[in-house]
Length: 69
Image (cartoon, rainbow, N blue to C red):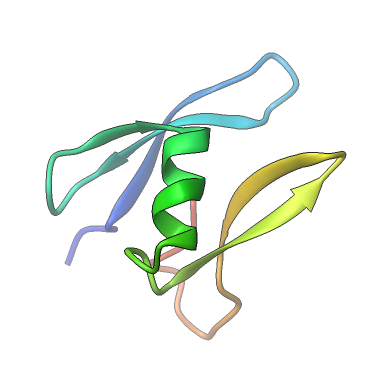
């Protein structure tokens, strides 16, 4: 089974900036993905505040299939 979310671009500092949902075909910016996580659309992900920036991260668990890379 493919990973649900794929990172499609990063900033020069390595921050994930754009994302693709492999199940729905939706492309999202970081802020759009954060909003969808906060709305409960992506249960396997949560938002962390990293250096003052809301950042999507996968929930810690035993699987690597939901990791962002």
